[in-house]
Image 1: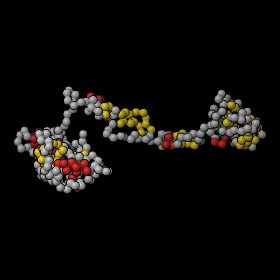
Image 2: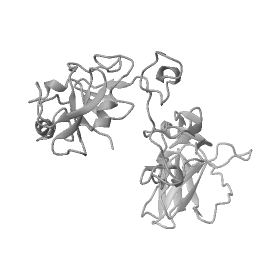
Image 3: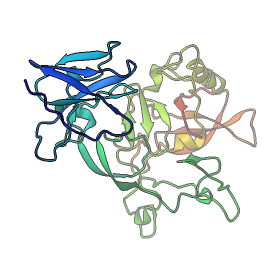
Image 4: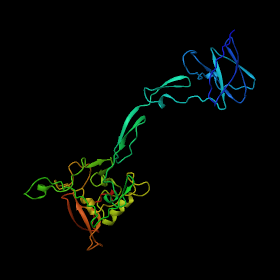
Length: 336
């Protein structure tokens, strides 16, 4: 048997061991320090400058109290030891970019992480999920130079910017007046001629089954108001408020506990002056609405004990009513 002695340079952080025997596939080396973790390294080519390979699982983290250690091997090796264990790889395919390869614990791993590339984000009204995967570091989140406190309504916060704009004076915000719905021109210069005001959203209404949201005002109305308990017929003004308050008892009616009697402007916001009987938008989803007048919660300031403003879906008129009379009730919620 011939034992080949190979001179190698070992980094200072590791300790080369003396190989004392190589016989029948077994290698024996001296164990100068039982506290060391040894690794037997293999050099597949003794002529070309090829690095030593110490990745084989069964030939590393060897530790023994014996003065000499014998290990089964299959070629020429060297033995090195260090004070800490050899660490195995932990990466998996999803940790690597798709198409890229790496060797982890002696096994080739092909990456599966999606290549997302550039990411551009424009803020919106709801949170947006960021796609999982590899991002190349390019892209941006859109900004807007108008997003400053003086352009936002006081105490309204958008993306961390709190508004300071107050009503009145030089720094003011204006209430948008919507179109009336009248498009017919009865003479030059009338409402049908100019159709002034802010255009309505399309669709105007969102039907939730038992409730309806007006996308123009943000108010939520009962879709069929006369299906509400104690609201099948007319009521006095005080009874009308009681009907709305009663909807908020316990768990509430239709999933909410903040129903109330609408004010006169809220009721009038539903009126569509392009039609009559009822004066409601053609695409409205409401059911069971009577042509008679409906109570508002707005009292008549000249006679607050008796007078109150009422709105008639028959012709869209706003008039005065007596609180002791009996009219219809249409509950609403929301608004500011």
